[in-house]
Image (cartoon, rainbow, N blue to C red; front, side, top):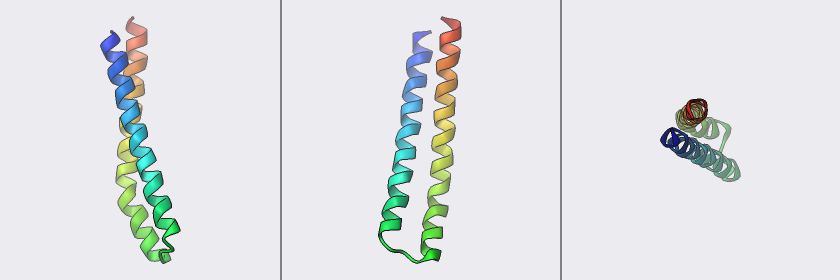
Length: 71
C-alpha cells in the first residue's frame, strides 16, 4: 500500500506545481499592466489549468488517504 501513498503524494505535488504555475502566470500578467480585457482573457486561459491542477491534487490526496486506510 506504500505505492498508493507515494503515488498519491506525487500526484498532489504535481497538482501543487500546476497551481503555483497558475499563480505566477496571472501575477506576471497583472504586473505587465495589461488592460482589463486582456487580463480577463489571460485569466480565462489559465482557469482550465487551475481547475485541472486542483483535480489532480484532490485525486492525489484521495490516494494517500486510501493508502493509509489500507495499510
